[in-house]
Image (cartoon, rainbow, N blue to C red; front, side, top):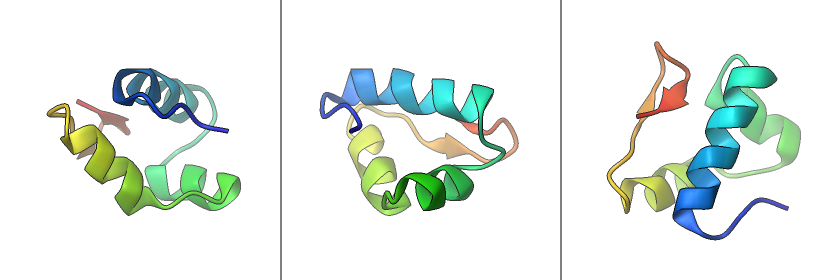
Length: 57
């Protein structure tokens, strides 16, 4: 289960991307998540996915 709080979600997602996954899409596919929902939720706290860095910045 992923965190519902956006700040906790940011930390969780960036840690997963750094330690285990080469892209947001591969993480979402593996965990059965919708990448657009994650992007929308994190956009609400002014973060967007940077594909080159493979993290939300």
